[in-house]
Amino acid sequence: MLTYEKDITALTVPEDKEKVANTVQVTYNDNGTSTPTSIATDPTSISLYGVKEVVLSREDLTNQTSAELYRDEYLNEHKNEVQNIQLTVSCLYPIENVHP
Image (cartoon, rainbow, N blue to C red):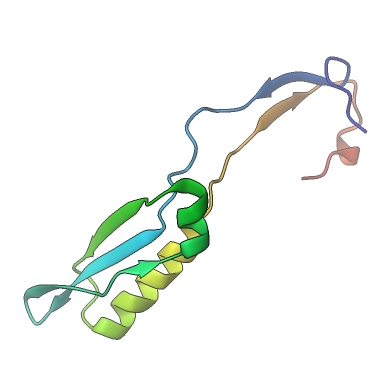
């Protein structure tokens, strides 16, 4: 077990959390016309963080199916808050014992 100030020499908790998105729409290229998908939402995320809306432009997507798949994957990956924590372990601590 790691002990702060003995084994851990520095701990950083960045303020910039990955942006939450729980209401997502994608515009795609439908034969030269920028066309929006329907809006996808995550009610649980909305209840936790409020409405966090994003509209993504993906002109490389050329059909509704691929645009909606991208929208749904994006929503799934961004519906929850993510925070990265960095820590620096003392050089005296056996590094092979450190696991994520």
